[in-house]
Image 1 (cartoon, rainbow, N blue to C red):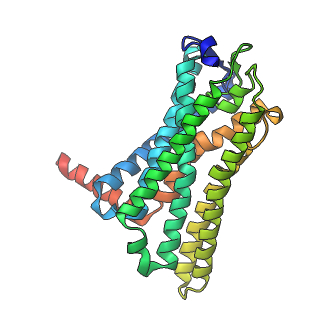
Image 2: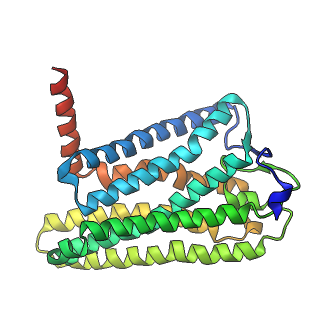
Length: 313
């Protein structure tokens, strides 16, 4: 095993995404601003849905799980990147690298399945409203969310074990701002082609299959909306679907681009730019698109602010 030739005292070097030029310094602080918005937006969503009993429904429960995943995802990559940039240190231990790989692959995988569950939830709510309470009972909803977490975590464990089963005897410089295993595989002394084929199959299951469910669900939703008599209902439903599908397209498009290509076709700069979409931008956009534009969430937020002000008095 490659573990015999490597210890957890071995360090990798993260080359990062920014240098200290004025332009890159501005971009770095822009990323910190995006991180702050994502951090506060997702944590607020989890708290609001937990505290407001009127939001204890399947749809909002799934939204809280999405916000929790995004909260954890952005905290997996950005703090370490910021620490390295500000301190001038580029090192990350093998244990730290393995931890990053586990959490970001687990969370990305979990989110893939959860987005499909959320699309199915909207399909049932709009196309089969009389059966909604039966099909989306709390037990079933919780079970589907739990399976999303379990499947994602399984993917994370497999990727960590497989990645560190290879030997890294040459350069230890990772051309990325966090430990992304495709960038790590480039440094391996071993033949990784079999693992890349396995990775391709996993991507088909974890990306293409959920995308098919999402497209099918929203296609049925749009067809149902077309037959609605209300013009306001048309507008609201189409606006919601287009917003959700835009975000899903960004998320899954970036994932397909990153993990279906062979290692030999990779460009470090392209990989960094695409990674920014699904590890930094998407966690910020999710609470804005899925939640904060929602009237019920806005009501709950105002209610919480009102309680805070009354408490101060």
